[in-house]
Image (cartoon, rainbow, N blue to C red; front, side, top):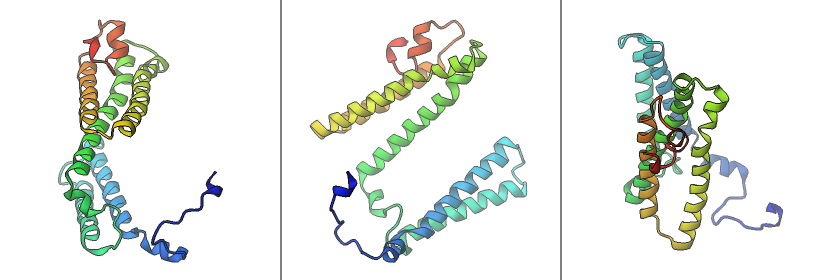
Length: 198
């Protein structure tokens, strides 16, 4: 199908070298270094349990901070086409949507990590059955994404949709945190997606 599309982005250069020059290589490298050193710091401090004054802990957190500052300086004042366009940070909607998506992602990652371990340790289920308890969450996210796309296309309204789909994962996280060894099957299977299983 893509072979039949004849479309050129306005202002696009025909030279591949010119296109490569527009890529923010330095900003991307600085961002990757920030993430790498931050993860190394978290690993050294909280997994290997090194002291705060250990050179690995101090070094990785210092390198992480340096890489983050370098990334900000590059994006704001140096590169012509930054990875993160600074003008987006001055607009309320992109910032709030990004924060909302970040918080929802935290909820989902916590759920994905917590639920299988809980069922293996508390209910003594197999790892296969414990993993199956994530299925309602996966189905809910898939159906919710399709519904959200359809709703946005038809109405163009996003505020109420974002609020509702931001509140539901929070409710599900609270419900999962309330699971006990004697919780019924409805709570076991639907707490992850449904506020009705209280």
